[in-house]
Image 1: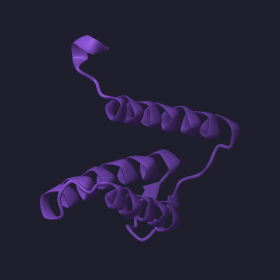
Image 2 (image 1 turned 180 degrees about the vertical axis):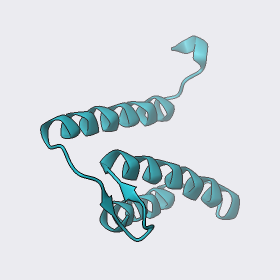
Image 3 (image 1 turned 90 degrees about the vertical axis):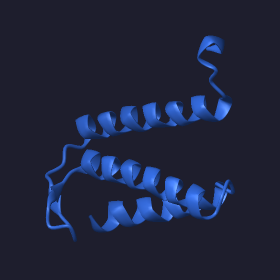
Length: 90
């Protein structure tokens, strides 16, 4: 990994994403679900809501960096609240 100049936070980020994808794959196999309609009025599954959460969290972190600065742990808290809201209402 040295040739890619990876840092531990970068590797941890991609490891978490990989674990999420594996977990959601296992959940989809064990507990199939039917799509549901939420506040966006589109049918979504768990995978769709995960994608919406990851995309929104990226924008939250970018906005946080631009507005607040490099104090990212608080952005993580905002992302977790956003994730709970997406999985609950979308």
